[in-house]
Length: 230
Image 1 (cartoon, rainbow, N blue to C red):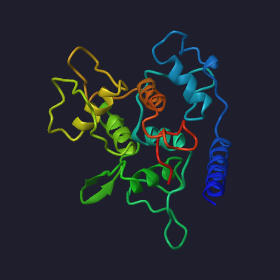
Image 2 (image 1 turned 180 degrees about the vertical axis):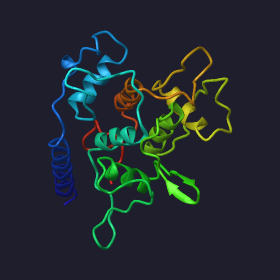
Image 3 (image 1 turned 90 degrees about the vertical axis):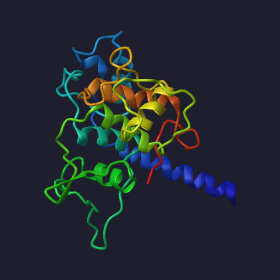
Image 4 (image 1 turned 135 degrees about the vertical axis):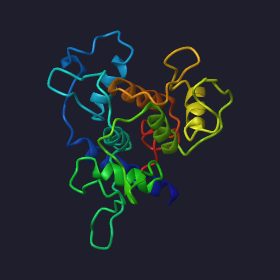
């Protein structure tokens, strides 16, 4: 009976995976004239396109140095988790606690899922809870979202010292853990630059390295998925 249940579970996850992939574009890194073989982000961009995590900004450009938004990065996470469906209310509507996230937005399900998983919390602006989807995402926010998606782990063996990452910062454990796992590095010797805007190249590279480390996916039936599906 247990063996039969495992087979059924595996089949369901495969179906979800195929369903998630069916609607994405067929972009290829070979089409981008701004992503050269040998660049530090080449493999990450190639992977992101192949797995339908993201596509280019046009048919011929990926824009690796363009900043990434909060909505875009959570969408990358959600797609990598195989587009798990967030819970809905009794009327079948998405449960989104943020006043600035329209349920019809391309990122609505991703944000709803991430909020339900405790990956993002948003902030209160003039008494209203907001997510600020179009704001540029910082390096600190990216590593924090990744860290929370991995279960807010603190089992790091070494602590990489950054002059601009105080131990009391909300993102310190995220930086320490992901640095220990060789997923992130600094922008200069001894500096992480937490408030610096995260580029598209950095965003997909951090996610790509997380996948390669199998941090959250080691026990999953589709080992390449690093995050627990809802």
